[in-house]
Amino acid sequence: MTNLDYALVQESGPELDDTTSWRSDFERVRPLPRISVHAFFETEGVANTMERCSQDRRMAKVNLRINSGGVSAAANMFAGSPTPNLLILETRADGQTLIEELGELAAVCDPDTRVVIVGHVNDVALYRELMRNGVSEYIVAPVSMADVIGVMSAIFVDPDAAPLGRSIAFVGAKGGIGSSTIAHNCAWSISNLFSSEVILADLDLAFGTANLNFDTDPTQGIAEAINSPDRLDEVFLDRLLAKCSEHLSMLAAPSMLDRTYDFSAEAFLPILDIMQRNAPVSVLDVPHVWNEWTKKVLCAADEIVITATPDLANLRNTKNLFDTLRKLRPNDHAPFLILNQVGMAKRPEIAPDVFCDPLQVEPLAIIPFDAALFGEAANSGLMIAESSAKSPTAEAISQIAHVVTGRAEVKKRRKQGLSSLIGLLSRK
Image (cartoon, rainbow, N blue to C red; front, side):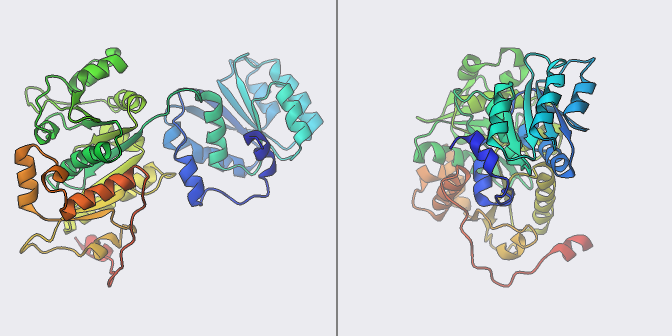
């Protein structure tokens, strides 16, 4: 059975939006290119689905307009104006009426405009007739967001192109809590454990530490990529990358204060795109700042890992990040959480279960405080697994590498006396 035939028989099937299998398949859909789309709806269900599509990160480059009405409304609107790259048209008309309305639309439709019909008639004969008349796809209502974006991806994303790599963004709930160290160790572990090509991008141009942690001093890196967007291609990227190990390359930060680093909201997105086309995994070391470009980078990443230490300020910041990112990425799972520096002597701490309760997540890893282990590795320019391969921290980083690349799931911990700190946060 083809995908198109499947669309014709799914009307009585279950809603897919809330299932694990749907998310697993949908998260592999590649971002759509810069196209213009007009959607015309006749029912609130399709209108709501299109609204949800407009908020999805895979649609970030798509110019989507949602209009009331069916095929006739589209024909009237475009009688005196150019048609977009794609028309998505809902109709409750019978087959004969629909064919007649499409004839009127064809008279005003540009030759390169693609048309997708959302119908309410489950009829294979009608589907085949529409295909003969040049319709790109026919799907039967009710439709899910996966149906709509999946159809658009099938039309506009080249199936023979090399697949986009997975991007993983690491960010700290506060500064100085070890997010960068974990990001660098995770990038190294992914490349070493799975023999997979990884690009690590240090986005903290002023104070980045990737070059120190890998004991390298490249003359070029992320700054040149940002400052030369017109030159940015696979060849230029390859010149800027510093080799850290057999399968790990790095876009290093200059880590100098000879200038300020103020960027536009879209500044890093071209770099992210080209990294994803050139490596199966891209690890982004995002600094602890909140502005337009960091928000854009976090929205564009496939996975987000938030590192926090177990105190009240970190809990407040982590909850703010979780709440904001859930709104910005409503169709992605929640960020992963790493609790770092747990068990520091003489420091009052929030228990991990209590910390995670208001966030409604299981921690991806709980890394114990070990100043000697991290200090020795940093001073030697080594990763934790190189310095102490059998340590609990090395095991934790290995687990992080497996989960963020989709090779394992977060292990559930036994909860002991969970109690929410929301009241305490509000009093603070």
